[in-house]
Every structure is written in structure tokens, then in C-alpha cells.
Length: 299
Image 1 (cartoon, helix red, strand yellow):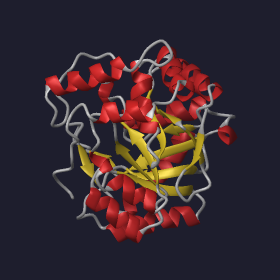
Image 2 (cartoon, rainbow, N blue to C red):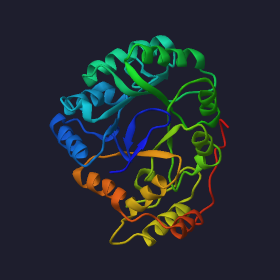
Image 3 (tube, rainbow, N blue to C red):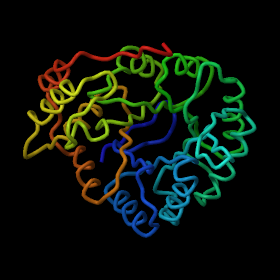
Image 4 (cartoon, helix red, strand yellow):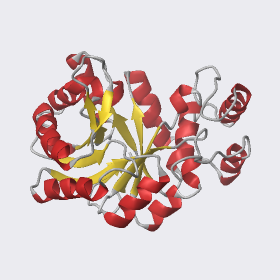
């Protein structure tokens, strides 16, 4: 496994991170998969307080009990489930919500601290200084080691770069979503802010799922990109590993956070680390297949 220091932190994160959102409802099965991941060299586990209404944090906490010193745990805050039973979420980035939410998160994870606490979204109209103050306070209290944001909005990312001490930004990035390349990746690299890439396989469209529309791309464009990925894959590197390699070989990327449901998926994804790296010609070939997309809002 390859490791990278996350931004200006002291956290050394594995190149492949475990996205816990994909875990099922069986604690025993989850524990087996998580421990297989640890044995494979994955040390970074990403969850959130709203995933499965807290169960996701609980099952992760049970699975890593006794192994806390071997792993890094990241969670997220900012979304709040409505109490009317509708299942809808409200956005709440207030200091009061963040300071109260950490207590439930730590209890469910059975830990005294988080390695990384992330704002689970964000808008330009948020009380950003208040939000930052909450994270800074939790850091001073020792309840979190570092904080970051999970956002795809360039205007929000710029504000946090200028006004806070975030060490990372989680954002969607893949061969079918190259929007971060225009401004976000260069900005974050310039400011030594780590990038945690999610959606690297575009929901499986870059691996084995049939072509479908994705963002602004047509079925034909998605099929063309998927076909290109498969064309340069083979015995030593399959399609999902090729798609992951494209992301991991970008200088700004610290880790790819991938949802893992089965042992086979785990082995396949971890295999991207040891698979042959893409050549410059292969990267150029992939980039040339479809027009690059750009953020149209929140610029």
C-alpha cells in the first residue's frame, strides 16, 4: 500500500481509503471486511453521522475496537435528519450543531477522538466563520485532530482555503467528472491541502455497469470513455484499476475513498496500488476521449 501525508497534517493516509457508506447491516460481516481491509494495508476509514442514521459509525466502531492505534477514522457533520419521519435532511452548519453532534459520533465509534472531522457539504451563504470556530474549538479540546470539508463547490472551497486551517477537501473526481481540474485541484495543491477523491469509478460506469447518462455526458459518451478504459486494461490491470490509477496518478490526490461491499471488491480495488501505472500516452489517450466537463454553478 502507498501512503501520502494528508495536506499540512501529520496523518499518513493509505492510497485507497475505505468508504464505509457501502457497508451493510450485519456487524459480523462488516467487521470481517473491515479487518480484511486493515490487513491489506488500508488505514483510513470514512463514515458520517447520517449514514444509516448512525449505524454506520456504530458498526465501524465495533469492527475496529482494539485496533484504534492502527487506523485513522474520519466522520462528517452538517446534515440533520428531520424529526417528522419523512427521512428528509436539513442543512445545519451551526456551531451548536457541530459541537453537539461530535458527542454522538464519538460514542458510536467508541473512541475519544476523530483523526479528521469534515463538514458534510457547505454553501457560500453558511455562517462560515461560526462553522470554522466550532472545528477549531473541537481541535483545541482534543476531540478531533484535524478538520476538512466535503464539497464540490469552488466558491465554498476558496472560502475555507482563505479563512480556515482545513487539511483536506473531499470531492468527486473521475474520468467522467474532471470538473475539479479547472481550478480546484491546482488551488488545493498550491495550498498543500489534501484531496480525498470519491466517485472514482463513476458508480461503476467505468468498470462493469452498462453505459448510462452521467452528469452532462450522454450514454454514447459514457460508453466511449468506458470502452477506452477497457481498451488499455488487460491481464495485469482491469478496468476498475485503470480508472483508479488515473485518479491516483494526479499530483493533488492524497487518497481515493472507495465504497467496498465484498471481499472480491476489496481485493480488486487494493490491486490498483500494485497494478502497472498508466503511461503518459495512456493518460493522454483517456483524456482525449470525451470533452472535459466544468462546474456550471457555485464558481
